[in-house]
Length: 570
Image (tube, rainbow, N blue to C red; front, side):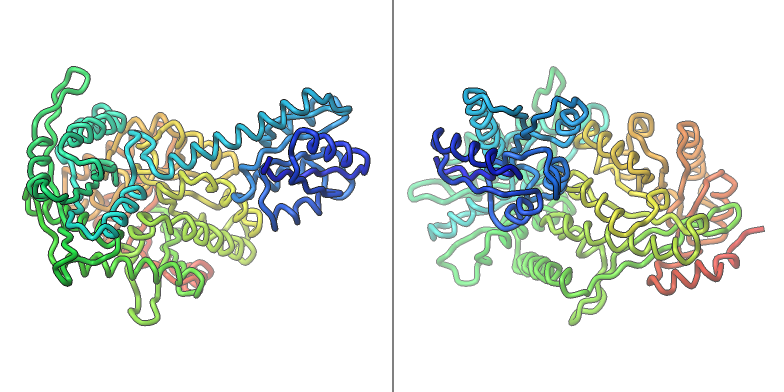
C-alpha cells in the first residue's frame, strides 16, 4: 500500500508494535517519531496520509500536537487516530472536540486496529474526492465552476478551432431573491443551464461563474452551426418564462461574448482568464446598454488584460510591503468623542501610484487573493489595536473595525487566522470588531450564523456593514448575532434635507435598537447631516465631515490629542 503513515509514541516497544502491525497489514511507508516535537518537525517537512498519535508524551503531548495540526491549514485534514492507555473521559472528550478521527486503546486488538486504520484512510480518500469535486463545481447547483470553464477554454485554444467565450447574466430576479432567498436563485440557474444544454455540443460547456451569471464555451466544429448564432438561440431560450414550484419566473438575459478565431491575427488574447474576463466585461456593457448581446471589442480585451496585470501586481505587493492600513475615526454622535476606527487597506504602487481599493479589492475577491490579503489585514489591524491599547490604556483605546469579505469569511481557515492574529498581537478582543456585508450571509445564513457565533465567542464584536444595499433582509437583524448595524452612506448623505431618507433611517435605528444593536451611520459629510443623525438617535458616525482615513501615525496623533473635539455639535 502506498499510504504514508506517521507513528508517534515515546515508548520504543509501542512504536515497534505499531510499525510491525502496519507492515503486516500491507502498509510499508511508515515513519516513526519519538515524541510530539519530532512529529511536528516531520509533519512540517513531509506529507502524510495518517497519524497514529500517543496521548501521553513527555515533551509535547498528543493533545497539543492535535491542537497544532487542526489550527494549521496544511495539516488539519490529515486523519489522526489517538492512542491511549487511559480511560479518562475528559481526555477522550478533548480529542473529539479537536477533531480526532478515532481512538485506539492500549493494548491493541489487531482486528480493531486494522479496521480503524482502514476506515480513517478511506474517510480521507473520500474527503479528498469531495474537495476535488467542489474545487471544480458550484456547490449549490452542481454545475461546473469558473475553474472548470477556464480549463475547457484552454483546451479549446489548444485545438486551434474557432470558438466563442460568453458570459450570460439573468436579470429581473431581485423580487424572487427577496421573497424566496438564494435557494430559489440556485434553482433558476440549474433550470437555465438545463435549457441551454440542448444547444451545446459535446465539447462545449456551461458553467456558473457568479450568483446569476453563467459562462459559456461554444466551439465551431466542421459542418456545425455558427457559434454566435447558437448564442442568439440560447438568449432567446432563456427569455422564455420558466416554472419554479408552480410559480412563473421570467428572467431577463443579457450576454457578452469574445469571439476567438485563431486564423485572424490579434483577434483576441490567447489566455483563458483574459477571454473569460473580456466576456464578463462585455456582459456588463450589454446590461448597461440593455442589449441582448454585446461583442467584446479591443478596448474590453485591453481592460481585461489590465485587470490580470493588476492581479499579478497585487500578489507581489503583499510581499513587497506596498500595502498599508489607514484608519477612519468613528465618533459618538452625541459627544463627538472617538469611539473607534475602521481599518481600510491602501496600495501605493511603485509605478502607478495610489490604486483605489475599488479597483483592486474586486480583483482580489474574484481571484482568491482576498484570503491572504484579508489575513494580512487582520494581523496588521490587531497589532495596531494592541499598540493603541498599550499607549492609551485598554479603556481609552479605540475599537478597531476590520472588514471581512464573503470569500474570506467562508474560507475554512478564517477562524484560525483570526485567532492567530489576536493571540500573536496580544490585542484585547473586546476592542476588535469584524464587519461583514449582507453578501457574506445571504448565500448560507446557517453557516454565517455559526461563524458569527464563533467570532463572538472570542470576545470580538460583529457588525453588519452597508445595510440598505444588496438584499437588505430585515430578518438578518433577528436571526444573526450582530452587535452593530452600519447604515449605508446612500441613506446618510443629504439626510438633513431629505425627508424620505430621514424616515427610513429612523425606522432602521429603531429596529436595530429594539434587537439590542448599536448603529453607525457611514458617509457623513456635512454638519447638517451630523445633526440630523444625532436627532434620529444613531449612536455613532463616520465620514469626511469628521476625518478622512488616516495613516497609523496621524490616527495615533488624533487619538492622543483628542483632535475630534473640534467637531462636536453643541
